[in-house]
Image 1: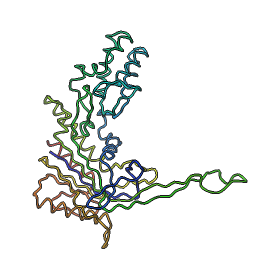
Image 2: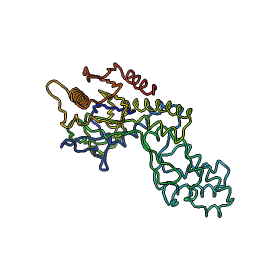
Image 3: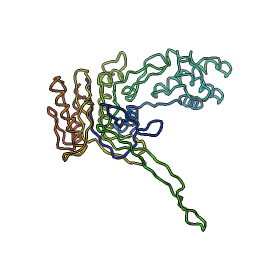
Length: 383
């Protein structure tokens, strides 16, 4: 089963996701330059949001970090090991996260890793056991991080968190198993042609003018690039993949039921956060906190994902009494109707929520966002 999410969301002047030069990210689509928000930006904004985390309250979530060695060192101190042994344990942990087990110069792993508390606890147990067995710093120094990673305890299956199960992970280390993401998130692209604009601004010293010989003028001059755009966002959640990631390789009936319950809560938390959370880029300067104007959720029994991005190959323009949002939703609704009729695409339910009086044929209209969430909840809970 796939739960597919489509959104039309118009943002006021903003720079939500910038490139290495500070410019809003962009792309060419349909031969026209569009504004873009990367999938990585969207996923992180969802994963780190209070909305997503509150929807999974009481459930452990993962952490993406290079600071595993520091965590291990601090844990060793708490376990009663000497500071020298704890420092060496942290050094050993710095070799995790790379295939060769090469220990790093500082207390960070070579790559950033998406790990759970189960991962951390198991690594601490393995390193602490090795430290205790060797008994002294000199002997422990000869134990390689590569060998520690091959521990049978680390090689076994460990439960993963809902966010790791959703977004997946790949770590070049025998201590962690890779996880195939059950969520696909497209780069959001503007339905309209992008026009870059610049905000020229100055900063004035508050104390200028209090002295007799003060010179007038700005203490700082700069500019920031921005644009305003209406975006199409598309996301696809593989329910069965999510359950499989959470349940493990050989789940019991009880474990499978638990995985399904967690998956249902995870999907609801994801859908809510996807609609209500905005990337944080330059928000202190622009405060572009606009909610989606239209949301379509399609639940497909067959794993055949369908994006409706081609509704906007021809960029949308306002005119003939219609603003950009209204014109975008109408163009989207028309494309969805044509594609579903021509291909006979099957989805049940097909939930439509819109702040404009525009309908999409063969959908169940939701009068409120809560009604949309209720529809999603019913779809995932009956599985």
